[in-house]
Length: 187
Image: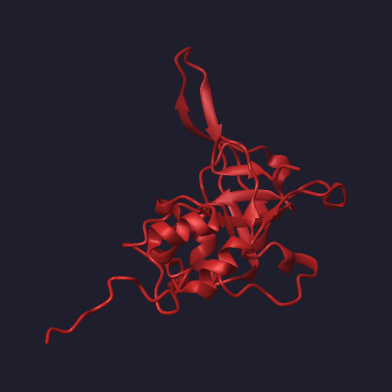
């Protein structure tokens, strides 16, 4: 007699990426990117539940002058974020960025595909460097910045138990507008 195998996946062991993305409320490519970076080590039912309940963070009026969100865009096949040290992570966000000099000292949230993976502070903002010129011949300047990493999360499915002070940001989704890679957190 032939052996009958079930084609239905065991969700306690592994959830397909498309189903997990639908449950978590994010797009499939973003979830695959997080898995490739090692920020979601196992894609089981508990991990999907954790991602779906991560919630969205927004700026509070008591958070003045406001946090900056730096979108980290590294190729997971060159360097996985989980394997990076804090120094490598801060070098990855150096820039150049089109930002004002007044951003020095502001709190920073490092985000990968919208999920906050690290918190820190802008230590210094460099002098303007000519990036390019626009159609009218005006020079577009950018600055390099130095960021100190103060807190970090290597697994998005295990957020800190006590969400006090700066750890309240870790593992949650940051709401930002469109634009460059350094943006203020929206309220």
